[in-house]
Length: 368
Image 1 (cartoon, helix red, strand yellow):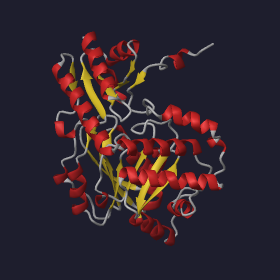
Image 2 (image 1 turned 30 degrees about the vertical axis):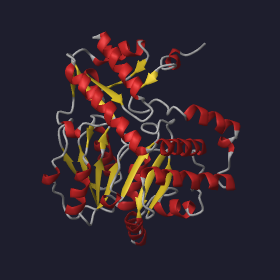
Image 3 (image 1 turned 90 degrees about the vertical axis):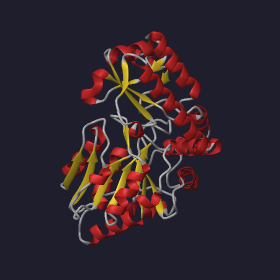
């Protein structure tokens, strides 16, 4: 008997902020992967080496990553939190917290025995960067470009200000629910990371870690001092295998293949076009929610409203809106954690076309 859980999302457009709707070319790439027996490729074969090289080159070109940054594959972005702390922090890390996911990174750092300095602001607000204070003993500053739980986004100039104020610290940016949309100035950061089930529109199970030489030097310093930097996924094991276009363990080969193909599709479309469409869709949705009675954008400062995760407060219980929209073929997310019952979270990723976003808006307006 078919499970109603599975049927609940079949043939519907998924606007939850991860996992989200598959990129519109993913289905054909998945079929081709099965025809070519990609999931059965050995991670020590020449075929995989060719795939690894193609994957990293495609990601580098798409995100304009400089050559002095390395690209590694992990099981998830959550894993990368652990790897960053194990490799790059001996004693202290600093975490800018304005939601559930930025807070969780700090909690993981504490669980690994580090002293954490947390600068927390109310959910729905951004940090006033000019007021940032932290001890010089902090080794890593953890920033969240786009807080998935609240829809707050940092501005690009924030990273430049932090880099100028704290040139000796490593800066790591969570871009899990914003990439590939943002165009980073890579000189302002040392590491960033993402997973593929959000903006890249792919099945979950693959994280991508981008790290520069300063991160590797810190890991070397820690290893030379006798500290553990982790086991199979440390910066040295990852680099040693990456130089051979391999991974330390048996990776998610299918995920890497699909990411390669979707990154190439996005390159073919052009990131300028993807960014323009994202800006249009975000402005359109925010404008609608500001006009409609019963809704209000959660982030009050327009310049800090996420372009990729639109979060709105609802007068009517959010579960009722989720059900109404599901009945019409749209799967949207509720608020996160304590915000669940009176917020909606709507993904605005590259796979969500302008036409589908306009149709979603028309549907909500008709239901009103």
